Image: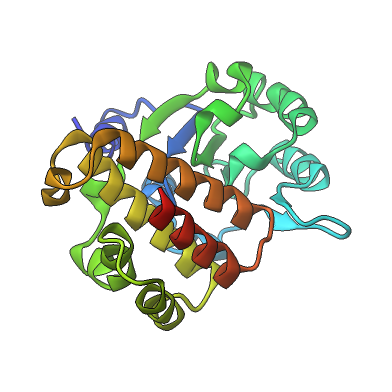
Length: 251
């Protein structure tokens, strides 16, 4: 049963938990699934106009280069969730939840342990291993997988991924990257597409697996993850992607 089917079943049966973790990459449908879930259980059509809906996002703070959720934002969220809702329930959506500091996570435990009646909290995460076990154990976890939710046109829009996999000339790869990657979000989506291809190669479901060994695919995935960490650390997008392409060529 897919995460979407499990969510729909919980809505139909009324078995709603107070806390969830939706895990998946940036190109998975975890955020839209979370928003649709909250709309369904609250009867709200536009969450942004709902006074009982609160969202927290990671951002780059003053004097820092790494995107993370600020302790102050979590403190404010906890205060808001203690207030009586105007409608049926308070709802919170925490994007990039795995960027919370350990201190913030420990503080947030109290809210997960003693939520106001009816409150529903959803944490969006790319890797639940970055969340404390005490956080994970108090949440229902749904995992959204990229390849099932990835639209074909999304993958097709990144021709540079094919050039990198085929180890074409760096000149051609650099040109394609410049044409296709315009924003940091584009870069994250591109990395998810590329990593999805390599994972398919690794398990033998992609036609390129005839030419690329499993060990080589694993090493290339490690290079992609290294690039993702660099982008999370606010690295220059074009430089990080070009460096990645060179390292994959050398692999």
